Length: 76
Image 1 (spheres, rainbow, N blue to C red):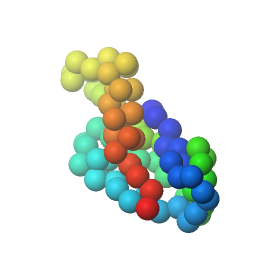
Image 2: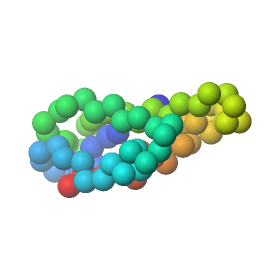
Image 3: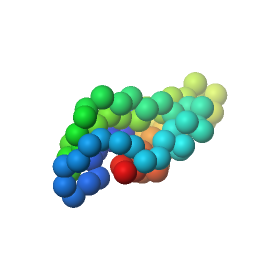
């Protein structure tokens, strides 16, 4: 799991600009908390990446993948 934090400089309405990275990844899920306003470093949700053990990815690799997916998210 990797937290989605507000990456804005000033508070504004919360609208994600990109979610393709999460939608295109079968192992990733976006958990959005439904907050109306994004602020600098405010926790807005989190990305979870799961593995079934057969993929050969350990916990560190899953966390790295969750962070990679999270970094692709942007706010408008």
